[in-house]
Length: 464
Ligand code: PFF
Image: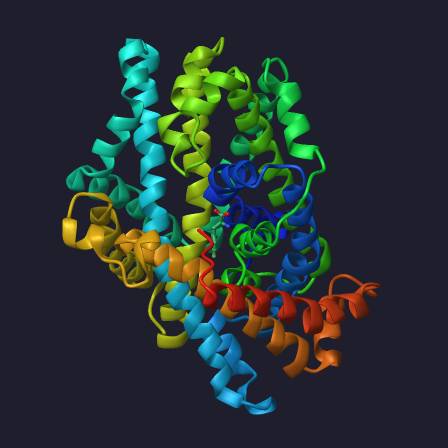
């Protein structure tokens, strides 16, 4: 029998942190924090990460390492010993489908970061005029509506992702994440240091940590984002956990991954808000919208207003592209490892077939931003989530991730034997002091919180 590939000791933490740290941290978290008025939202988010995210992360890694299998075959591994048997493999299939859906539109946005990296390079060398600044919004709209360009950058990003996954766990995923993650952290740290000198820094910190009223909506959004940002609910960490050695401590690694993800999200907020708050309030109100596209429509102008902006701007988009790549790799690995573990395919073929299929779906998403009117106007869930892009995002964030997370929590908390879960968490770690607390959170707190989200979604709430 072939022995399973293994991450080296630090390789797992770096790769899993790479999966967690992505567009969700640098793009989505700052704008939902801004939209929810900072402060209290951040506190609620931190609580959601600790009480819901971390316990489910432990559960996913545990299942992966125990079975040494990716999600579908991992759940099948337990089939003969648990009530429900093979039915639980449905959770694995859901994970594979979720990976496919998320990567289809995630790689489109990732492509934008590469495009804007190139744009910034040209602005930095060729000059960033007032006219360019005035047209950022309309240029972004035109870019979205340009089908061939959207497909090109989406395809480029998918090709690189396929290349990395096809090169294997150690030679591909571990090597690339070990190279990119330190660069990403260094860039972000430098940007943070630059932010300290920005006139907006003080207000940014105040905004981020002030305590104000909190709305139910914000709590729901924080819990929903906890899943997305930690790559939970679709078996990405089951998959990565299946390449983890028995001598490694799961509790320690999960804690480190969660900590890194959270610190990076907060650092991204400091950088973004320092830039945003450097603009006088009156001006800001008119130009800075709460919309998700500020990264491309507003931020470039703010960058070029800063001293050193010609360097900061391209470096920033490079950072976002790197962060996205270490996440797209893990999304593709979930789908590819299904073909490898369940169907016995070779890695290269699996990566190529999975990547091409996802590229195909992504083309539909890429053309639904204005290029094709039928795809753009398709709205099975209402106008708010119109277009293939919006529909995929709505479906993945609102249904697929929460349901996947709920099922994983129920399976590990209620179906798997406590002796087994304890043994796995203690292997390579020693006595796990928080086992009782972890199991309580997984059995009661996580399911209740997730059901609350699902009920809210049924009631018409949408998180994306
Ligand atoms: N955690 C990633 C982010 O915050 O951008 C997104 C993601 C990656 C979600 C991998 C799910 C996943 F399996």
